[in-house]
Length: 282
Image (cartoon, rainbow, N blue to C red):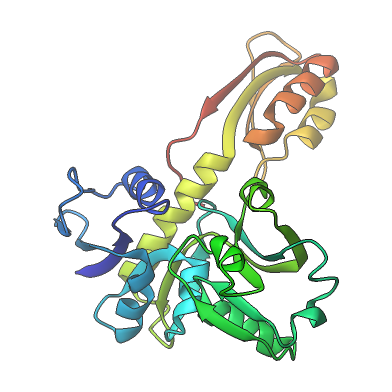
């Protein structure tokens, strides 16, 4: 039975559960459940603190897990990313009072407060910067005001909270993070149950990114239409009862669907329809 670690709370938990449900797996109904067995799919889910998941997976006690790239790297665990999942995206940046940092070299000799000591310490070492790192569990913006550090390193989305704290972003991003599937370093990458799990999640990712588009087009405009909707391999073409017309079915990216519909209409296509894709295997 495949043993999988899933975040039990926080920004990773809800989206991870939704993706697993879309992939056909049972998921817990109450947050107090710590273990759930899905006998039909031969999977056992363990709901753990996101920060601990990389440690459990690296120990070999669990086969794979879902956590954040930031948490994986910060843990220093012997585990590796195998599939990005596209949710819980975040960016890590340095921030300080205006005028403190012009370049990253200005960090030399300063103290950086962060909840991700492993990531920041490695980034500083990679850049050859001699700075101290102090670990804080959240609310790192107050570290500068209270004199604990001169610089912070934290998740930045819009930057509003930093500006409200009188801080400004400095330097290039330390890391771009998102939810990822991880496994123990050196684990069998061809294990059948692991590959099946990954294919299911990849199917969900594709289904979320594409819609199925159907339309009718005159045969003389078919090549131009197919250029707009090439599909993943090639579209399905079927003759219509009315001579000179064909029906086309093709997968197109969701974010491009409206533009493609406009272009097809201008080309003479009619009965243009899009439908959602719930699951797929490529």
